[in-house]
Image (spheres, rainbow, N blue to C red):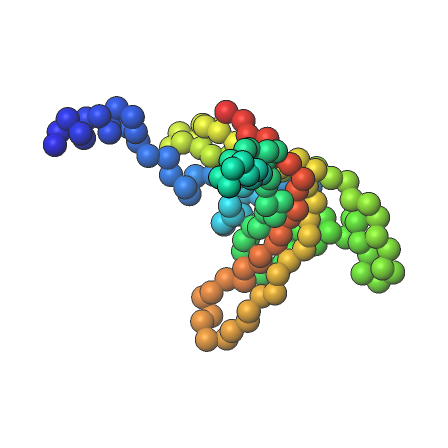
Length: 161
């Protein structure tokens, strides 16, 4: 059994922790408070052609979800909501209904090791904020923080080492 353990240990000396990530969102200076999110990915699309009744599969261009959610707690003064809604207000005015084409930006999600060195990252290009989800309110737990679920959209991904 020790040979298997040694072989495993030679490949994965120390597992990469999922909690040690960082996010960079232009215009949002509080990205350190992002509590949870996803590491976006893309997959190759497939086209199927038939020959003599058999399926032959071919890869085509990759496809991503284009959808990136984050969950953030807020302070008792609402600075997080103000900052994220401010990004949305740059492109849409609720009072007048005026929609201005958004300034699209790049969002980075970085995976870090235990020494906070960036191991790899992905960049979501041409991103913009879609808005926030509903918040379920309850008065049965006074210690539960207010959590916002915001959603961003992006057009394409770039994975970096």
